[in-house]
Image (cartoon, rainbow, N blue to C red; front, side, top):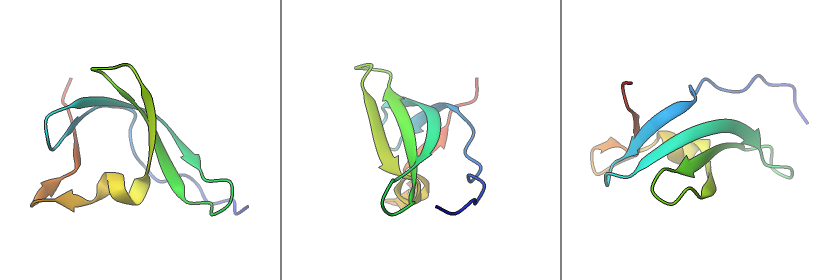
Length: 71
């Protein structure tokens, strides 16, 4: 495993481009590939999910997939 520092992704509330609200809890690494993953919770269903950081940060239909919500 490499000792790279985790990328900057502040924990907190984010809005999905389709409107759902999700809370980023942690960043984690895939045990085999070492890919960075976002651990997050659906605020609607209170379920936990993981998604590759690269997907979290990408644009979809001309907008950010997940955008931070100002609190």
